[in-house]
Length: 132
Length: 287
Length: 137
Ligand SMILES: Nc1ncnc2c1ncn2[C@@H]1O[C@H](COP(=O)(O)OP(=O)(O)O)[C@@H](O)[C@H]1O
Ligand SMILES: [Mg+2]
Image 1 (cartoon, chains in turn purple, red, green):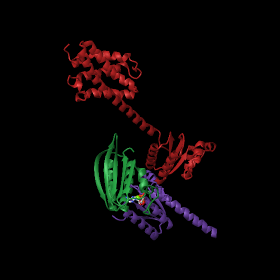
Image 2 (cartoon, protein in one colour):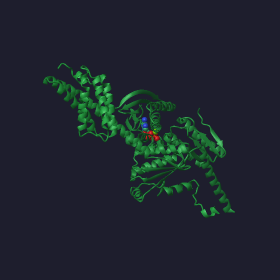
Image 3 (cartoon, helix red, strand yellow):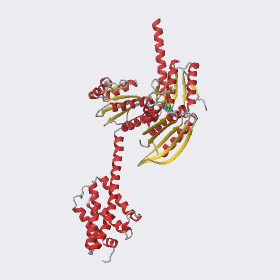
Image 4 (cartoon, helix red, strand yellow):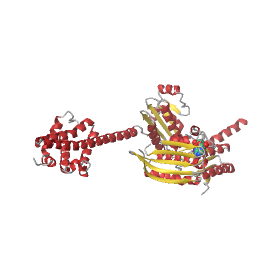
């Protein structure tokens, strides 16, 4: 397998990482995701890492990159389901994934993205009202 | 007297036990507060019997012989037990050395030839010294086990994670927060976050005596790890002295939600979960 | 004194070797009953060092050992390469220093994740990194 499937769920994209990624696979995921966000105009990306047992600085950087890149394309990225041991290790490694949103599970990640989307639309509506 | 040393001990087992018990009962190191005299007698009798059973003219000079395994086992049991009961090393040491005295008394009464008495005394000394070494070794092992168990218990007791509301966990920290403790706190907290699906954790530090830069670093790490999991962490119980030292040490806690009391942290947690606690108007309800 | 209980060697030449290598390290850690958090720390540190090996030195060899010292047991990993070596070790150990345009957390981060860390390097000859993680460390 050299591609990780990207699922579309309404205005969002969902990626579930099931295997330990070697570097090529992770880099492919980065470019595939950015392409897909652009193609679909998705407003959010969920990356489920609950099955991932190791996140090293390489993988951490990819997650950070994905978040920054999709943000430029107006989509927020949420990493969900990080295992406790992985979180403790990342902090000790010196990586706090600033700029990446996190949530406990896919459901809450989705709610978080929806909230941001609603808030965005509200602001846009308010702007419209003001112009009238 | 043609009797061999081993025969002498074997045929005078009861007398030897009496001599030994007598010595123990009159000794300063007797601890009848820790062990009853009946228990002491039963324990001593078991050891004397095992020793009499195992001893032969051949193995008496070879203490590492496997024939002494039973004696060593009983002796180890006794000294571990004493370690756990709180006997001092001195009291435990005197226990086994008073057996030496008793045996020496016995052979002094039985052996009249001075040359032979000297020779047998040396053998007895050597044997009992080895038993003494075993006693100390196992006594220390027993103490270590006690310490190990207590350490585990303390770290378990001192880091309880309480679910105070659906989605809200509280973790009161009592005592100093060093790096190994922080590990335990972090592991417990993060695991409970997963188990309960809570997205807010309150770390209450009112029971932490002092916060220096190291402790602050540990707190910051815990908060950061919680956030990586997708939960938020509030630190409560910040006393005025702590606020002062934190600022004096130049520690930046501005990225962390801090509250003075557990109550205000809980209020904040409710607000984050879009909940409010309201007083019920009793009069209206009665109508 | 540290005693070696078992030894296992693995040569690393491509990034595809990374995942099987991690599994070998995990096996050793599981064998001695290491807890999940320490396992994760060890494998993450190992992952950083093995990546450095194929990235900066074109590959090398790793020795995986199960060791013991008194009551404690642990896993020791030795990464040896014949690459260009590191000129300034203290610079390489700084958080954020990287000649590879990456995060520069590999060496200092790996050091924080294990109990013992030793880095030796000779320019033009290669680099050896040894790490040790105790079961309860
Ligand atoms: N095995 C090695 N051989 C040669 N140079 C190395 C090796 N490992 C690390 N380095 C050097 O040390 C620097 C820091 O490494 P590291 O902390 O892993 O960060 P990064 O890999 O992100 O650059 C690297 O950029 C590289 O210059
Ligand atoms: Mg590196």
